Length: 229
Image 1 (cartoon, rainbow, N blue to C red):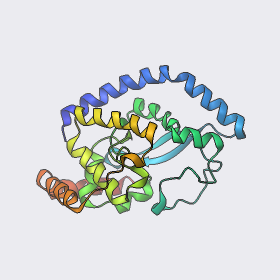
Image 2: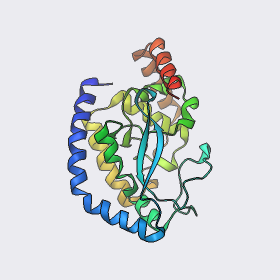
Image 3: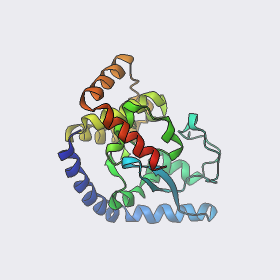
């Protein structure tokens, strides 16, 4: 991981998030009014996620569901557009990723950055393998490599690969490519950009991680994650 680039990236993300909040304030207002008008419920939905070094934080979203008290299925963590629990407004804001806009506040607070592995619920903390614990060396992101390579159409294993790959290879050029592909996903949909991962790619990444990180470093990362539960 290029630590110098990551530090510069965090500083730039903070400034960009401040500007983005000002620019998108009319969108915030319009979405808030639409959500309230539909069912009178809460506008912002808060959900606990696991961040850098296993630290827990509240991730903010525009509420897109009729009820947020629904049993969570780890094997089906991507909510489809035809989910009956989605509100009418929710279907629209999820399609265009507008429901993620409140996470600009997470970026300003230092919980998240713009591009990095997406943060998952604490229920997944016990599922991580040693090789993928490197994802917790940086802040989670609003979008990431997995989100522009198929996202909901990828297997969980493939998404794990993309998360670890990004942390190992984060760079300005890779971030630019992710930004451009994010625009493409918004226009053409996730399936158009589906890129499954083969076993050779998995083997190569695991070898690279093993060479760059000592086993003690990996174990320490795992202990921090477990201690933060």
